[in-house]
Amino acid sequence: MRHLQFNSFRALHPVIAPLPLLLLSGGEGLLTPAIAKTINLTIFIVLFYLIIRKPVRQMFADRLASVRETLERAVIEKDAATRKMAELDARIDRLGDELKSIKSRTAEEAAAEHARIEAETERELARIRQTAQREIETARQVALTDLRNFAANQAVDLAEQLIRREMKSEDDARLIQRVGQELTKVN
Image 1 (cartoon, rainbow, N blue to C red):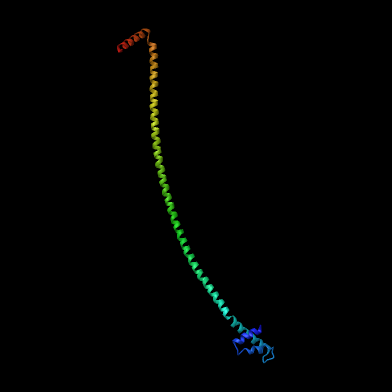
Image 2 (tube, one colour; image 1 turned 135 degrees about the vertical axis):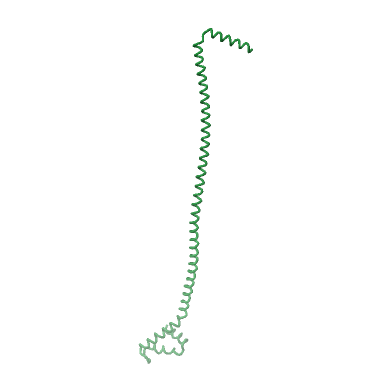
């Protein structure tokens, strides 16, 4: 693996390519092992930086674009939600007005219905009074007729009793004779 790293490093930087090979020789060169390790670490960090710089930049750029897109979508959704909320508030306000309108209309209809029922009741009472008045008048007429018939029957009965008590047989013969004469005159 070191060989691959150094080959790609040599391709990038031909001037410094021999230096890591010397440093990796295990300390037999000019530098102490600690310095060699430090230089190797620095080279590794530089190579690591050079290798992953573009993909990391691309990853962060993509992530930034994704976050921006999400934020723009959130702003659009927030605006839509705000408009929807305003619309719902307006509808709620209208519902309050509609409720007041319905209550007033209901009160007016109830008052009209009450007046209609009162008028109908008055007409019904007048009709019942007229019917009762006619029935009373009819009953009065029937009672008067019955009373007259009763009075007439009583008068006839009393007259008959009176005549029987006071009439004698000679008066009876005279009456029969008079009725007979009147009948012959008529015929």
